[in-house]
Image (cartoon, rainbow, N blue to C red; front, side, top):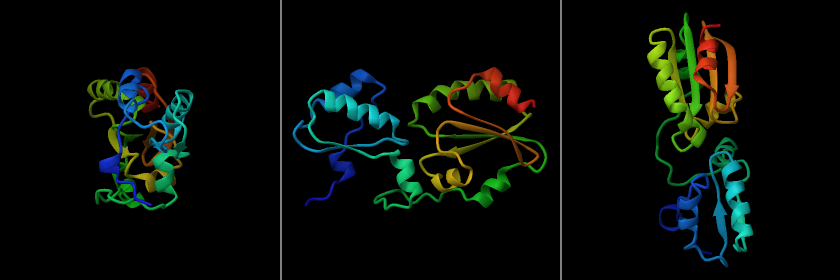
Amino acid sequence: MERFNLLRDAIFGDRQIVEEFRNRVQYLDKTKPVYVYCAAGSRSKDAAQWMRSNGYTTIYELTGGFIKWKAENKPVEGMPEIKPMTMEAFTAELAAKGITLVDIGAEWCAPCRTMEPVLQSLQQEMAGKYKLVRIDAGRETELMKQLKASEIPTFIVYKNGKEVWRKTGVIDLEELKKAINR
């Protein structure tokens, strides 16, 4: 059996951009197996359901997504050698005194992209009142596991090194400001 080559055989189709997704998958052979995955599994589940209802006969889903795959220490070939942040390095990032906002997310995550303007406004309005630490969910899967963060985006506020607030999902600017001002 020939091995799948991600660079040669894969297409990127964001199911949340419906027209783009339809345009990209229209070129797939509906009779051949299709492997569908995303970061956490929810978008690929939606894509697989749509594909099945539109005549694609054999769809395989990566349950729990790429994050779960990596968290289970399953092999990944061809990943760039970027050293993930360790728990020790993360702990060092937390200010001994002061407030730290941790943003666990990823560039490819639509809800994370939705939060970007909110975080930018927060940084403008509360400059100097907190430190922002970003955790890349695609790379820092071990750290996410240690922080018990299985969904993205996740926001955690630390005060003097102790966790005081946590929220997952899209949130508004006022809620973030309240969390920092606790």
